[in-house]
Length: 202
Image 1 (spheres, rainbow, N blue to C red):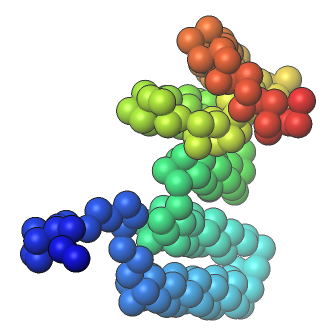
Image 2: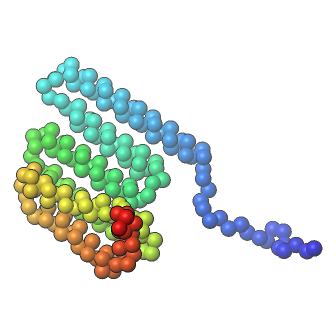
Image 3: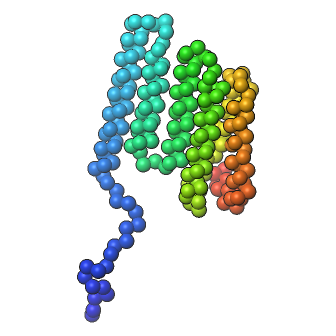
């Protein structure tokens, strides 16, 4: 019939961060408003483009720029998504943006020759650094890392199909992806193989 702890001395252990419903609603509204305004801007530019100079569709520049801004705002800035997913989304959306700009500006191939390979290398490097920071809790990054490693061979595909003309950046991106894969096999062999089996149901 006695108290187990004195009043005011016990402390509650908070295992999870507090879920702020109001903040979530504000972020959702901002994201939806941005999508609405972005879509409206693209439609207005499309109408102006058809009226003024229909022979040159510059509206695609606006469309891909708005697409990248919306991805950055909704998925990278306002979202509480996994950091691996944010890095992957940035690399993919930036790749699309650069490819469209390059194609629309005369297909000079600067994007597929140099920028995209080193962008993919930067994405793989950022994911690898993130994994080193979390160390034992890196398995949450596994799917995103596999996706980025697969993207490391995209520049080589561009070169083989003739879309790219310079070989060494494509080889560098592919070699970097193979190196990271080999390091995972050596230093995280058991965990790596376990995660690989789970993802592909081996």
